Length: 119
Image (cartoon, rainbow, N blue to C red):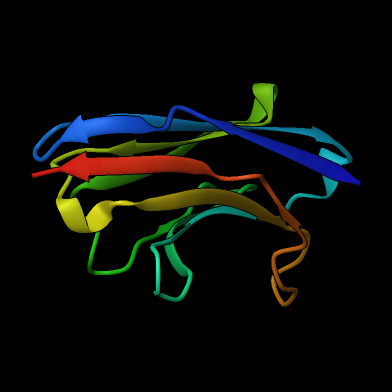
């Protein structure tokens, strides 16, 4: 089992920045990749960043490219999401998730942290 705990959400004005953290514990040796998702009220959950644990390769959708940066600290089993130039439409609950293989779904999820961007 793997446990994921997010932190760092909050209220920020448009144009501001926030940094989210996600600490993983338990059977973290099985990590293939970690991702950050978000879900706004009435909308589907969407992937906003992913990082492969072994080589650090990253992926971002167009909606956040150039504004969000995912990074990892392997020694601390922690993944970060640096969010800059935040927009009101970035308001959502942000979740970190972990997958144990390239082809699997994300197996483990954190509890979520609220990010609210005011205009």
